[in-house]
Image (cartoon, rainbow, N blue to C red; front, top):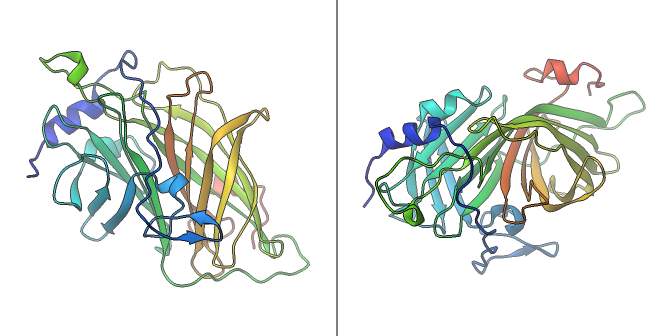
Length: 315
């Protein structure tokens, strides 16, 4: 049975947090018996399991602002659980991002889901995570597009086939979120995931079918006293014929960052890109984890990030 705990959700996501009393291990990637695409294991929705992890599927209705989540992670019943739209959690996120929360009762796991749709409504991404309980946490991401892959044509001039995308990055971690106050033993307390915001920029060559970029200016918004977060580089990787990609990460100083990024291009002339990241944000703490997303507009098109795109050649 699903019970409403909207008041606790607001309290948990706005409460102060002095530290992380619950450091949890990364959950094993689930194997739900689904397919492999080009040698990459994927879930039933076609998302690589290194990015979907426990998340099996999502259904998002932007018009009604409703989110249904199927995750192997004790979030509730039935299998596809409707998360509650949370205006307080949304208020701290960049424009266009919407937060949803779910908790059966005060001693059940506290889950947050965040959704973003591209400005042309051609692509979208979702991340879901709890903050941990009983030494484990559950997380995953999802991306999708409407229609087929439609890359821009290539030419000789600047931005003709080599284009840029820029905009906001949003993540959920398992260590910076608040612990709601309860009159119970600390070992029973669930933790909410911490929200992370930043910027994302990628360069793409549709002739070479390659992508690379960076996530930078990351900061936690539920615990701003934490040290500055490191910038993440999305190492150059190949784009598949269907307009999807999967690559590896490293820190901006060249150190390895345990994790991956991936996504999909959508819209006419690949006007948008929706992507996910899953990685260990603190190499000194192997139990730390962050799942993040970006939904970006191609520079030079309506809805692009004017400040980040100012020096990028439009297509």
